[in-house]
Length: 213
Image (tube, rainbow, N blue to C red; front, side, top):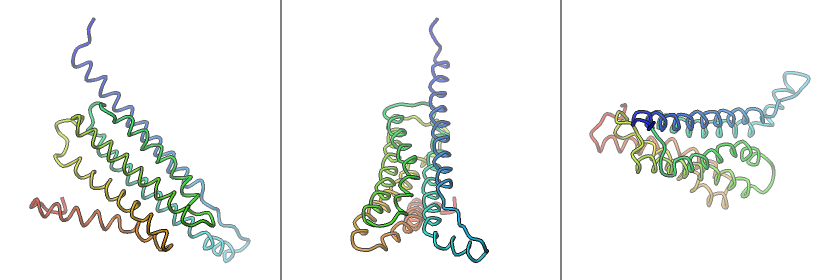
């Protein structure tokens, strides 16, 4: 007996839902691995333990940066895929490659906080995040190109997360050449939230909208 159009739509929706659940699980594992790799401060006294924690401040800072980056990726993915009703094009392929970058981030974080060869360590981490942003953008483009969103999706949903993806791509990609001149290249990463907020404010003003919406 042939399946009805409603049955086909249900199968397609379940495929998209399974991809979402799988992605959420992988992201959760990656974020957990970040914490598991943190150095535990040691010391017989409070002062020694605090001193030990201070000696590893760069590990803790790298953890917070990576946690924020992965969290930003997940936020965009989650908000987009809640409106995806089916898979199509190369969405699954770009999603897998995006997840590859996500699960590589804990390793890249350990590389970043190791010693010596600053340029190599920095560039490796920044490249992982650049590719994560690129694969996220390509995934969004496939979703828009093949009309995979439900009719109730916000009109500017894809445009909003295009902007998020490009903010990450620009931030990490531009920091790579800077790293060959100074170790202050880390400051480039702090520009991402400012860049995102500024461009979003400009977009909303041009459209005559309230920026707080």
